[in-house]
Length: 303
Image (cartoon, rainbow, N blue to C red; front, side, top):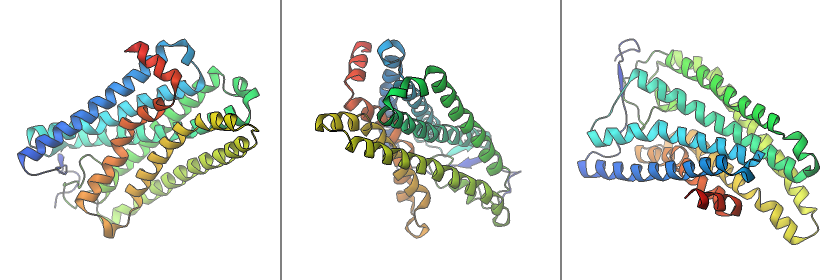
């Protein structure tokens, strides 16, 4: 078996063996990719051009759309190219870059969703202090902290992953370079070096999740104290898109990384990975614009 010093490329998992199914996979992913580019691009342009949307909530939504564009562009183009040209190869450097950007963008998105929970908490529980606590400078600082924290985490995790020697071949059981699948190629005695980073990742993710849960506990308590039913519905409807996006992100990612090994199969791994890496970037714009009339109007103006 080759070690890490002799590996120059990895082999990604193909969606299908027959040429017709490969082309079908290419067309399907191309449609999803173009839909994600169009929907997220419209949201970015609409928020940037409409001064009425220059508020903290839409500022964070613009950042979220940028992250969705980046994350889906990290995984799908290479997979589509491999299906189109009937190959499985990805270079060692290309795999490293893919891992870095995927970790970077996904971690920033999780941090940003945590910040957006705080935004909804302030808007509903402390509306009189909204302008003070979430001024333009505070929003920029929080967004910069999310991007900076994601960058440092991605550098640490990527460097630690690719510093491991690989002695289990170079075939990755996934359609892009996913860290859990890459770790399966490492030598067992060196795999323990990754445990510290994995534990840190789990604690960080759990801490953000607890913060989101506590924020929504306070939000629900505040909403239930609103006397009118119309007021309660209006207050809760501003949180519903964010809650749906968080639920989709957390549930799919949790199942992907914590599912029992006994249930793992190639088809299940592919389906679950598509759910957490491809579906959210394509669906998030639809979730946020579905019940938001201001955003709908701004998008119509752009179109």
